[in-house]
Figure (cartoon, one colour):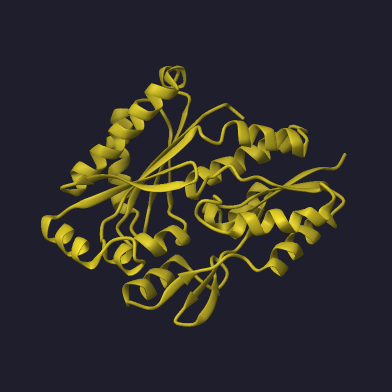
Length: 291
């Protein structure tokens, strides 16, 4: 019996190799670096990206071309294995790719459902894993869509920015504000909840920023989902840009705060790293439904 295929993009952090292992399909995100086009995990590695970023190259993100999206969908639907697609793009609040995909899906007579559950990076990856598990269990595309939308707000990410240079470059902080923050050693903590990316706190050190993120996740989850916290039913994720070592060190603090819970570590998607630069750390949490 044909089933539902799961398609996402590289903002999920899922590599092409991992996609094959998981049985999902990943659209590579395009980047412009000094005017040349690259595709994440195709001809743009993490190492190459950070090398260019720290060399002050002109780096910008773009959304997948309509033709690339259609080619992926047509290829998947041509396989006898599938009769429908759940497409999970990055949050519509952070990119126009979701709205473009929704428009393109209108010509597929309901065979392609684009789910805007407003996730990015490690929480987006969790959505893909849950969607795949539901598809493997024989759930319909409509049932998978309902689960993803019903649970979309049960997720939060806090991100510590190590260097304000990249936010300044993108116009998200003034040069004077960036200079003052650098002098004072301030490490901004941002929050992604739903479709919004907002400032959350200003920590005076990396150590304080880590504590701020842990405390914020605990407070958010305990206030909104106390039973899940009490039962240890959380997916905890740490994400980083460029250097994994601080993430491994941060994991020890998170384990102490959430004893017994598994913690997944992965690099931040390059579309996020493009705006916040290297040295960033993030802590995310979603509810674990055992899917």
